[in-house]
Length: 366
Image 1: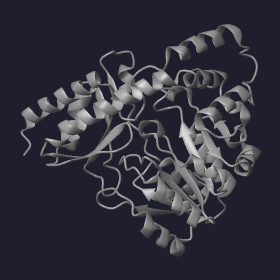
Image 2 (image 1 turned 180 degrees about the vertical axis):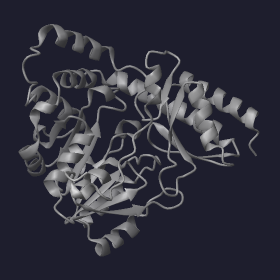
Image 3 (image 1 turned 180 degrees about the horizontal axis):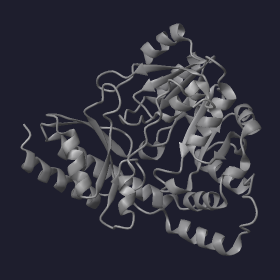
């Protein structure tokens, strides 16, 4: 296309999940386990807040562009000052603002891979020079070695997801803090989309480090994926820069009200997280007994696994026929035989367990 951004010529697009599950959106039997969304509805308080918004709010107005109540609520939840948080129309939107604010032509951006790929795509589209730094064969990261390698690579920005998606890798907070402190000339983007599932954060570091942005979302544990709302935690100077180009009208009135209500009922979220972590243990134990499956236990609401004996595609098709949708990672180098399955409640995962057993009996893998 002659009018397109020339940076797009050699960029691989971010590969989204299959839309097949939407064919069964009103079917109570469907299990959408491909995008790490919550597998249950959000807090009842969210529904009450939305109903009230429908009745009482002015639909003909733009949404609140400086919702101080929401900012205070996010800050309280994050244990930081109001001036150290800002909300966005999803963490993806935050990533796009970060790229536009802090990346210039040919700036080096280091990403720890395999990982969530949207940041890479957006950075390359803005002419950033994205460099992959791979995890080892067990999907672990040697942070001491990375610290040494940074002296040679000299990136302007380092993007790291903790816990990592899709591998579930949990990076040690103390070592990560040491890395950030030792490299004050690098801007660290730590994506904590799955923070609620392991409860470990690096956000305390923003109080005395000016080279850190923590990215979070309401799409996972809070169950608000369809509302598209996320937020960042950082020092005031970085947030002031982001606010220079942030379009405050882009976070809908409904998303703001939903986030407020969800934060007001964190007990509901906490209960769901406990259920997911419990069923994850059960599901991982089940997978570990299968000789044709090699699961990697992780700290998010999902399990990454290698499927042996060339059975991956057949398993995906079999599960889809039974209205269970999972994520195929065949498009990424070195994970061609991998899938990722989001974790739901025990009842939901027992259904998946039963289906995998049925598949095994029909295909007799070794």
